[in-house]
Length: 444
Image (tube, one colour):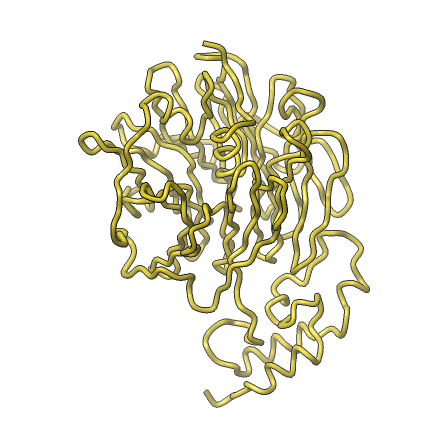
């Protein structure tokens, strides 16, 4: 059985983009996502839902985006774009396949209606991530091979954090500037043993260097990490979720022999991951929440979770009858269907404002989407226009074309002041203020 990394084809490209990163698997499958499940277990019959399923942690469910939000397409073209993530300034980074294969890819930054091309070369730049300071990390491959370098961008300064000829996978960066990524060791079953690296701003160290295929790490602002430890020796494969804190690593998933993956962690140390459960002849993808040492079912119908520090969770659900994924969010404990239309979509990231990046997949093309806050002139989204909002207007009012006149780098941004840029023209001026002024009611 020859180890392979799929970067083309219907399943390969889809699964690569769903998790914002490519991954290592075996035998014409894709590790870290559903490729091995489909190949190892056959065409799995998922549970078909004819009505809205209520999750254990959701009090209600609605077949529309949450009130106060709208869904836009960041891209709308014939290219294949994916690997998107969003920071708390509303900036979205994504990669675009340049041509018919992933031999060439470039990284782009979207901010408040403007899109900038960050890389411009004949390399394979993929899997970007961005923090609130505008620092961006991604993986780069040169020539016909896969990614072998980790790149770091900070306001015009680009440096290489790591290089490994055997291969690296897409990195993730915290608001501290620390970042993590997997590095191939080309050992073990099927030659896909992998270790996890952590870069602290000065140098990198191996968090785990033992046997196993350790992939898809996520990091929070306290340098706590979660990832999946795959065991590709058995057929079907198995996996555990590992957690790192203060130089200690422990398994936080149960002892049951399940297929688990796509773990995520917020600054409150709340962790979610996918878990494949078998019910008779059927299989269902379940999201597990690990909080304060306790595992509970977040929803018995969901995948690809990302969470913020408020406990909001973006995730996706597979609709067997339609043969597509649709995007969902749990916002303040209520479940909403972000994409009720028939488009194939899945979530990729969520920020502290509940804004979610999406992938609209219509292979061989795919677009990046964003569920964002609707701008009304209100700053704190508490349902009124009062003095608290006015204080933000005093801080943010800057005059016409402010950002265009003062931008020195593609990552320069209005950040949270963007919510007062009602007309989306990259400034907060009197035209925007007029909307707030007409609705101002300090006594409410």
